[in-house]
Image 1: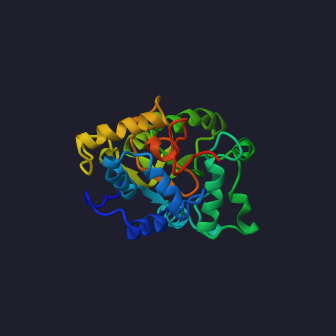
Image 2: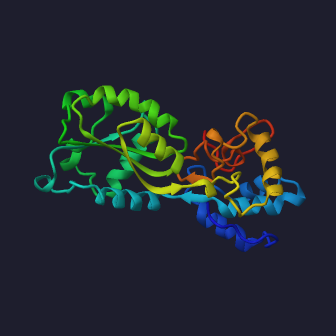
Length: 274
């Protein structure tokens, strides 16, 4: 999370302008009016807390995603855009359970970021169903591409499927734009994937954790009541991650629900569903 402004700073046009600039890339446009409606859900005494939550949101836009993909690919041993300089075979695969999930959109972003959108590179990009026929071996590399892992649970569950398709024993990389330290450790311990990550989130990025010092204990308790209105089942976000992370294409459910969850009692600013 980002460091919020100090308590008591005016919620004025300049602050709204900063939020608009930061959040302009979200898939459902964020406007001044929507932010005002979101703030109005807080009591007068808690509007300052709400504003500081928005200050602290880590918004990961398309340009950030493209930059991270270029950096992560460039750091992989054995990779080169020139086939003759590449070590053995490489395959890039969406880390998705079905068509249309985040892995598919991330592969598109990856190709854009790395200037590999031309047909010349099509053989490098395959779907999960093609892994058996391609049968990558021990000298080959399979890069599974996704955006985020909050707990590592979904990644570990998906690995059970991929492991049955990768019987040749290739090196398997899981490339993520962001992930929690907990998720990366779980993926490392429970699977044969080697996670590489652009941004690692730690306990201080969990707003409810003691290591998060931007918000007081009292503020966290007040915030939790609003989060329970948005999602009574997971008021701290999925896996109790307590994050303030928002991607341009979607807000993870590990983020606190007042940002992404719609309910009878709450209207989200970054809804996950249209």
